[in-house]
Length: 309
Image (tube, rainbow, N blue to C red; front, side, top):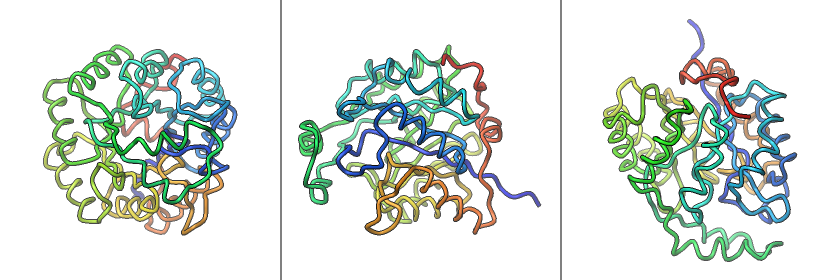
């Protein structure tokens, strides 16, 4: 019997953590290139990419910054490139949309609902910051709504439809699964689609195994065999929840966007380190990481030659 293939997505930098939290967080375009290629070499089939201001590390959706690393990653690797439309919770939808709209990636992320997005508890762990934007960015998140209205979601789906981009549909709660089903019914999301269930962020569903199982049961009931299931766990929840997903027949996402850690109190020195750790878990479960070509087949992607970078 052939081993089941598991898609590993690696989210290499994100907008949750700030540069002062870890010296290993990729910030410059070259660091993002190196991190993406390292993750791919370690076994990631998909790399999920944000951009940062190379001077101060602040999240940015400026297409000019994305242009400094996207072509190099494509030139040097077969990995599937997934561009964020989430950007950062402080950005408007038009700003967040521009990289995916202009570069037409095979995959882009898309959040399925507005939510409180609380990062302020990170101030309990991290006290010293190099850049003046970092502390207020975290502190003010106790009054931050990450806006993703029905109109916003429809606008992103409709804007990218002609590009053939498929979506990593990020669901932070069961209500987001129902929102995804609504857009499936409207014909704006088409099978096979990737549901990325997110656990452990303040404002979303918790990280208890019952939460994971409930999200899976709900997705199965709503979508049947039309979807591909994956999970990400925030912070210390990353590896336990990824392991649970793999054992339940799902796929996994790791990376420094979601967690800075590679064990209790030990910072991950690279995205590749987290990919290698979850790959070891998969192999211990007699599972095999999917290659980029296999991920393209599973998700019915348009192919790397059909992107605009």
